Length: 498
Image (cartoon, rainbow, N blue to C red):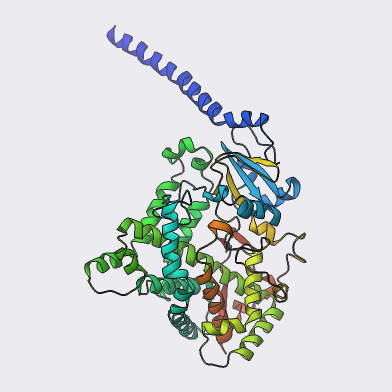
């Protein structure tokens, strides 16, 4: 009888569990969709595709090419539109006018950051790019980095280091003459060592070893891939702690592996009284903890290497595919550079090369959707309501290919940048590869030197061809979306010494 009684109690408890569970789910859904029903009495949201119950527009977004999906939506719903992703609202600007409203007119209120769950750092004491608010901690980090890394004086003092790393790259490629080379791997190692020498006075990557599995480039790109994977924790934040897809755990593991590369250097520098007078010494002297240093270095290296690598890889691919532009830029290099070694001081003499860089960034912006912003309070943009805590993004990929803005927008045409003042410094809202406003990329001054210097060195020192005599017109130019815009198929070329 006692056993029977226990079974009856157990079955009753078991049967009661499901109604309670369902009531809890219904309560949560109603709670999170409360804003949706209330918005009916508020000024309208920007237009957008009709959301499905519960999931919103998640299934309409797809997984692989959201920047293209959003650009296609913009053709139907206009330059400012809204989507509902689970319980979250996303606002998308897809025109220069919308970009002006988001990044300039309402920059103060929309400069807060929307931070995905997989990002390992959200504190303004640790992060510039992913700080939730532009507060004093964020300002202090920006000031330190701007003064020590990105000021005009700092950039000029670093020139010799960058030029040396470029010479190392050219020497490495001379040995590879006639062999197939993954351009992105070589460029990534070069850029990484440029930055690591400025920050910690040493190389961390071998040009040869960067091609093996488990490379630093692989770790960085895997982390950006995890960060750009659709995450149920972002669509339904109440489920964030469960990490149902395991993405948060994977991001933390990758973050630890990346930081392990330079942690011994930090420990050694703390124990050694000698000074290198570099950025790491500045951080230690400013009483930064190891945790602060790790997070800041992760952000600098991940943001400063992958974007630059992608830009150069795309530029090389476009020049291979457009032989007339390749011939013209090589003629300019031969005409203007007579010395044996290319220097940063030569870059102002190379307007067509600079135009090639800009044109490549127009077609293939490093961050196609920029980093997402957040509305900490409700506001009005272009006569529409932007609800509190909405995610706000600018689709610079769509702007760069808009036929209302650009003549022959799908054509690689560097000449369009030769006879005007259009630049990427955040004042021309039809061309925003580095964003604009408070959240403009702080590393812009360094990237503006690195990219043309490396590209010019590759083109001046070598002729380049596709393996097996393949036709350049058949070169695969498909994109792979991540936080950065990558070539789906890595660019493989054969160098021949000039």
